[in-house]
Image (cartoon, rainbow, N blue to C red; front, top):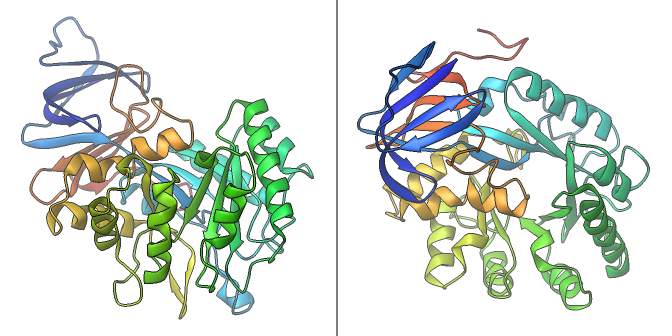
Length: 379
């Protein structure tokens, strides 16, 4: 079945004007000023007049099997439901383990990713957790990444945190070798996704790792860099070296910086916008007993545009093409182009609310309502 999106203001994420998009077999097969549907059989027309078209979001930091556990068994957070992901405009997730690499494992994480795939979105995972040596499926990070299709890197490895292993730099080098070489052998990104805590050293271990090794700086993705003000100051220096900077949605400018404030600061400092990403830490535990929401990602992205007046293309890239390039998923993901997966958001041009959403060509949100749910999710 064909789907034809008509007359939307198209962001690829770069703005290319008012366009029609033709979708078939889960892919975008054509983008043009006008596409006639004469001669097309079984075609569904979606009117996008006055709407914005953009790629579905990529969230590279989601606790799909649930985070938490630091306050005992009752504090374990349940697995994430499909509707929570879709309502945030997210069409691709990367699942992770956090502090708990003991009662939760990579096998469970992998199976949850496959379940989300079966329910309609795209899901990858990182092997590992906070600790070093990391949790794995095959016994080594290098073989997990090289041999298992869904595993694209290692993470979230903790530094500067009371829950970190406080391992020597030599151990981090060994881990980086396994991730980097596993990525080469498997044709994947082989990233090392790094949880940065509130500890006094901040990014110092990462600066040392980069300075005393020959690994490409783009393989490292430090996250939570807006959690406190001192850490964002360090992030400016790391960004000036060409490093990736991942901001976490939902942070407060009282203790750290909100995503809108942090993004504004980094851009004003001249940091390369293509190296800045935003993720949700969705379904993870928040100090005080709260649960991180994937939906906070959409809220913060919206605030960047409507409240901070940051250029829409720049903001959009932080959750689409920037992430896709770092994870080596571009242009299959993070783009609207012929041949890309048909992960498409149709947004209200005034308030950026989701009007429609297609994931791999299937309509998941229609007229602002989620119409696709997970197997055990209330309909």
